[in-house]
Amino acid sequence: MKLAFVGDIHGRVLHTMAILCAWQMKHRVKLDGIVQVGDLGAYPEPSEEVRQEKYVRLDAAELDYSRMLRATGKLADAIRYVRDRHLKPIHFIRGNHEDFDWLTSLEQQSSQGVAGADPFDIYRYVADGTILRLGSVTIGFLGGIQTASDSPQSILPSAYTRLLGQSPGSLDVLVTHDAPYGIATNYHGHLQGSTLITELIEAIRPRYLIAGHYHHMNGPRRYGDTTYLGLSVLVDLKEDALEKKVQPGSLAILDTDSNVLSYVTDDWLAEFRAGFDFESFVEQLRRSTPAL
Image (cartoon, rainbow, N blue to C red):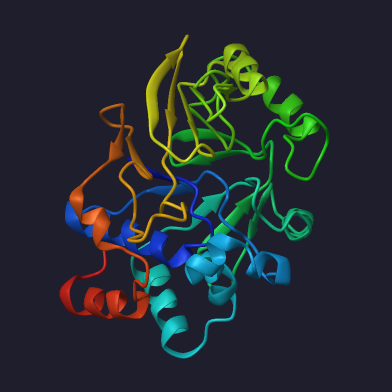
């Protein structure tokens, strides 16, 4: 089976659906499961503060999640077509750029830690500490980041403790937003990453750890029995990124038959740029390819 993992998308839910469809069409295979590693940009009712953030002003696609929730007409038809004919649900975790109160309300309505997060049932929120089976693969989920003091962005101690209690080697994949300590250095020369995540993987030894947050490809790296892969951000958020396009390494595929986890770095990813027209893409999809 083949599972896809997507990096931080910061609202670009339509870009995400399109690149997943494009990968499937190019490989003539349907993905068996899809996971997004947090910073989905889940703002159902973006506040004025969110709307005025510089990255939102540079690219309105940062608010596409809210746009999807209110989709009607051709956009709703296009989303529904993709969900019904092409994509499995996309499971996502909490990052550090979300509406945390809203995600908490979803968790309260969830069944076994999973809740639908849009009218089309294409994005599903996975609560921290949840363990799911996607096909033959057992996956643990832990959102948030390590912080100096408690905040809505923080890794939840109760969820962390639950995962820490798993038997070593019982998880095939651990999906987190934060990454192990020491994966890189920031602009000030300080080491990045989470000591909590490092201690967790040392204790429970998942085969793979897949994470986001740091916005660049990092890995694969070995931490004892665990292979870590850090995903790139879907689209470069920097103010000087005048030609915003989907980044190599923002998508990875785990092939469980061959036991290979690899980045997608193909040139075609760059075809999905700022101003991308999802409805036109889906119309072309309808004309040129049968459903998988």
